Length: 405
Image (cartoon, rainbow, N blue to C red; front, side, top):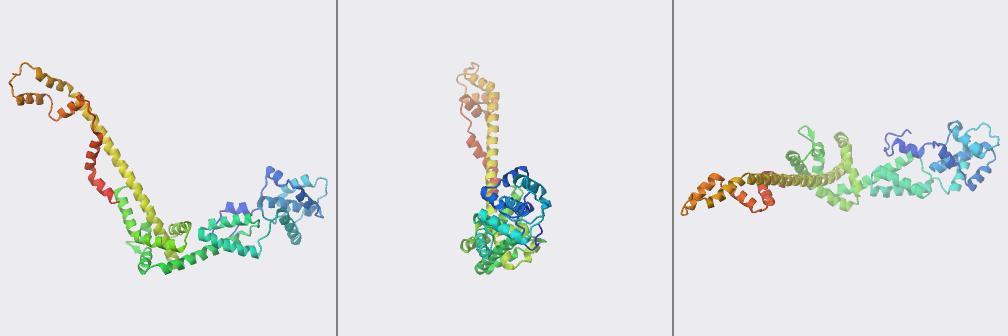
């Protein structure tokens, strides 16, 4: 379905077809939708000519399927025609089925509307729908949200859906009206300093627009990337405070704020610079608000990740040291036994100084091995936690860098 390029693109081609294209029935669909109630059969039987009755039967089935009316050539629905004739007009002379005249078609629409308790979207219902769209826009200015709420309202009120271009225009008016309301409030709330900072986002800095650099997200948790995130957070901080105050007083929904923020990523700097200043400032302020919070989340995630990494390193170092200590203790058990033999060695005089014995003992077992072997023999547990904390002191430089995030 062709649309005016100035209109909002809201629904996909598939969604538009699901709403507005003539139903394409399979055999199961035909059995279902051409299964008429007593009231529906009576309405068909009261039509004077068989040809017009077949048309009414077709329109009735299509309305049950999509709650809309269609203009079609009989040969484009030949399989449906054959089914309905065989099922409801057996033995009757139908002849060549031709398109209905407009007055007859409109009369049949009235019959169907009365049967299913539906009504067309008249001026009154359209005005009500316009007000509804405005209220929906205050909850979220995402066009798809407004469109879906409108469609749900039409269904609940049993109103035939107007044409897609009409709904596009109405959603566009609602979005524009809400944006104008918010931008007017924003312009009154912004300080000269905030205005200047927002406008500066679209200025070039060292051959790159500032907003382009600020939109960039950290690739990983490396120190360089996180330092850049910290700098971006520092830049957005004052704008975030301004935005938080503005959002709490302007009645802008969280969904609308996210939508406006997303437009900064959607539009190029070229497009943003050519919009009305008040509109661009609204988009940029919402972007600053959500980007600041996203950066906070990123830095928290990075901090948690890095702390876990340091804990893993500490535990691994403690495990490796414990295993080495146990291996060293086991390897020196023979030497420890020889040291113990010194106390019963008859070759050592009874009055020999202890220092003489120590010299012999240290020849058998290195002095630093004594505590390890002694603890091993006494079955004293290795102090892994103490060693972990001792190991963290070797990471003091990395820990200090992490703390600045």
